[in-house]
Each structure stands twice: as structure tokens, then as C-alpha cells.
Image 1 (cartoon, helix red, strand yellow):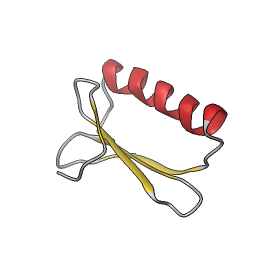
Image 2 (cartoon, one colour; image 1 turned 30 degrees about the vertical axis):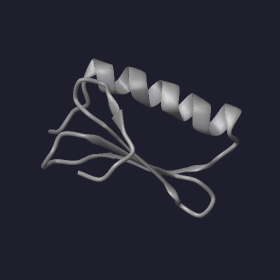
Image 3 (spheres, helix red, strand yellow; image 1 turned 90 degrees about the vertical axis):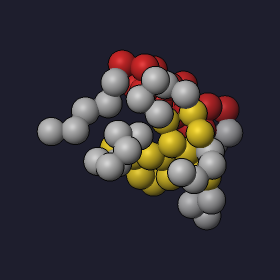
Length: 64
């Protein structure tokens, strides 16, 4: 079973709050990439916002 780290979950909470409460953007998908162990977030009305949360909790908006 693939699991997110505590640092990833803390970053995910912060991003989720910013997207939904502050920016009023919907979140379409949250999953863990089995290859990289990164948490992937797809959001925005046009699904134009993509984030990856690295295992250490850092956020990357650039593709690997």
C-alpha cells in the first residue's frame, strides 16, 4: 500500500485550504504516484492547476 508522509499531508492540507477557501477553486484529483511517491493534485475549473508534493513536503508545480 502506498502512503503519504506526514509532511506531504501537512502540505496537502495547506494547499487544499488555499485552493478551496481562499481561491475558490475545485479539486478534481488527489493521488499518490507509485513511481515517485509524490502526491499529485489536479485542481481548477479547467483542471489547469497541477501540483506535486514531494515526500519531504515541498511543493512542485513543475512536471518531473
